[in-house]
Amino acid sequence: MPQHDANITMLSPIHQRATIAPNTFAYRIGELKVSYQMLSQQVLAVGEQLIQAGVQRGDRIACIAYNQPELLTLYWACVDHGMLFCPISPRFAPKQLIELIQTHQYTYCWLGDISNNSHNQALHEALSNDTTQQLSIDYTQHSSASAPNIDPSQGVNAILTSGSTGLPKAAVHSLKNHIASANGSKSLIDITAEDSWLLLLPLFHIGGLAIINRCALSGACVVFEDKTVSLATQLSRDKISHLSLVSAQLQKLLDSDNCDLSQVKAMLLGGGVISADLLLQLETLNIGAYTSYGMTEMSSQITTGKAGADSSSGTVLPQRQLKIVNGEIWVKGECLFLGYLTQDNFQRPTDSEGWFYTKDLGHWDENTNLRIDGRADNMFISGGENIQPEEIEAALKLHPQIDDAIVYPINDAQFGNLPAAIIKIASHSTGQPSEAELSEFLANKIARFKRPRQYYPWPDINSVGIKVVRKQVIAAVKR
Image (cartoon, rainbow, N blue to C red; front, top):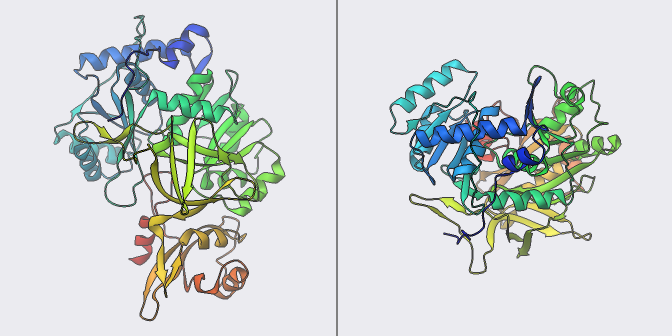
């Protein structure tokens, strides 16, 4: 377990802001605007209720909810008292949720407002048969108590990773991790107390949690998504200055008839490679769009750069370190998480010098920008040749009719494996390109032996996260 400096204490950023600028807005949802002073008082009241319920420092609270103000308030109450905020996607089946709760030994559970009543009822029934204690919290209460001093190096949250095999691991972060992450991000993407960041990414994803930490540290306003209007409408109506998007959200936005991004200062793109077609559309809009490479274990962004046709992931941000050894990416720095949850504590798998192996592959280009080449655990061998699926996927996504692609091996008696591709057609496309057309398109982009031998349409599946889960898509096609 990493060593902490218990001598350094501070007020949570929420309470600091309530002292500095009490009347500025901490968050907005629809027409409701809540000031930092009011949020501070709500956070203190929730903390008092957690203590009354018997929750102690270090206890793990499973928080099953979509984005809502109560989830944000609960996170900051956990920060105040060193309790572990453990957000989980409600999209998990009840049986999976119980398995996650039991595996990671979450001793308490809070179930938020979930619109699907049948699913909500199934969750309640499953949880009632489990030993986890369900929390009932009144978020309308306020407290005028003094805010506590906190140790910023203690664990405050556990975010589930999108692990490639088995149950997701739970990565623990400290407020110190989040502060380092926010400071590094701010060095390139400035955010001030006059700004607002639209919360499109879920708080059970590190990208969503990073947004609320960045806003609190800068005194900016978190704006919750309004699902009653289009994204384009909300951006204009609420005068959004910053937003984070994944590829599918960006595509939907750019396809809108009333897409006006003139007031947007910064757009941070993540969640995987952005297609060349989307990047080209962004270039014509002349806005501050950034591509990035990040991961849960590094508290979100690691590298960031201006979005462009070169599709690089930019350069390393301050307070991070990144090295490439034999094509494999290793990272460390002040953003590096405390470790994965274990039965008694948490454990960080690093080498003797503190480097963390990401399992990602990459290289530096001629402009010292990072380029991601794929995942070490996705590679397969075809006829004695190493095949990196992400290289083929990147080439396919250069096609204007293709929005996404996943390449995987299919068994072959002669070559052992051959590449096959699952194709997601762009929304503006009239149909999937033929195999002959795709072969011709790839002819001058990748070697012949790397070209897919079979093409399959993208399956209709639901995902529990914001990233495409390769194994889930491939399994759906194989059925």
